[in-house]
Image (cartoon, rainbow, N blue to C red; front, side):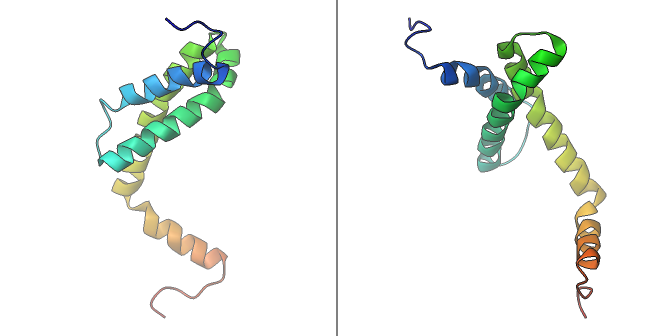
Length: 107
């Protein structure tokens, strides 16, 4: 079994988030490329967000990393589904066009 001296510290820090992100796939539906991207993004969010979460709630970084990986991408997936269900993309697109002073689409 590898010891802490043989496994790089960066790998040790990232592993809980990767495991949590893979666990989130049980609830996230979508294409395999999208699900793989979600694991990557969940792992990155965990790697960078776990130290802050651990400090805020007084828990270990490993547990915080796992929780961010597990629930972070599930929350993001729900937000994107809601965004799509509400049809907010065309509204946002027109808002940006107006703010940039572009002509309305179709003119």
